[in-house]
Length: 328
Ligand SMILES: [Zn+2]
Image (cartoon, rainbow, N blue to C red; front, side, top):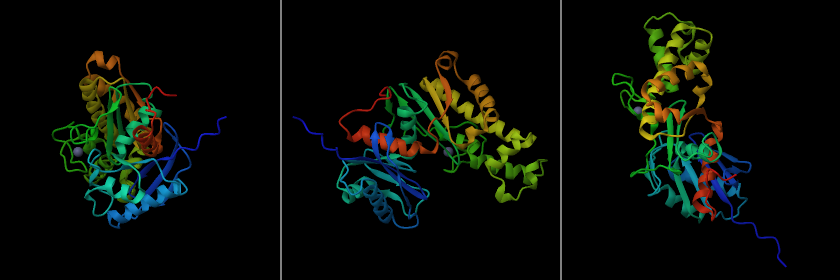
């Protein structure tokens, strides 16, 4: 006679953001229970933030010891060493041994990963890249992030930082990005870049409905709204940003021959405004053969991708059953 198998120890995914910690227990290869949300004490030292992360994990498991925890963190980090090099939205994060500090607090194995890479993994396992072996993910919002899945593996590279699709060059004379690079994609196509350009052109006296807005309200959303309403300046700004995105993607298609390029982030909601010039620029740069084998599609998971990715990464790293994109 066999009784019911005991519940296995939970696997937990955590999304550590600048304002919110979200933690959830895995219920499948890429699904999770109701997430716990705690405010991030972003002004406090890293040890205090990690105390809050541990509290969120314990709350998510109702105090049950987890079998493993994966955490996504916004910033450059080394997953193999378990060290976060920097976290721009939090104070005092420089080469913090996050894996060790969390393993001490939680008493279980911990995996750390960049948040955009986990969103990439989520789109591959459970989103718009499901069922493929070669996928590029690019997400365009305040900044430009993303990641690569090649031959069915999330690409890490020698330093663990591979997949920074937002910081490839698109215009040698282009604007400076949030990381100080002149001419990279983020400097031309991010929401920050779009708002900066609109403010500069309005200040230079260009005619636009945007000129009537207070500077504080002149953000990427306002430029998108003006463009949709037919404002010529706003349309030009979006056209140029979309073209920069397409030039970068065309180069990536040539470099990697992906089956699918998944485009996410708030700006994709700009629809044809973004998509038409983007597709045209891809077509100018990409070779015909890899382009014919590549679909460019919107992301499927939205803002939940980071948490889904953390949960899926916990399952991938710490469960006996390997997750594949083909799994149900
Ligand atoms: Zn850059």
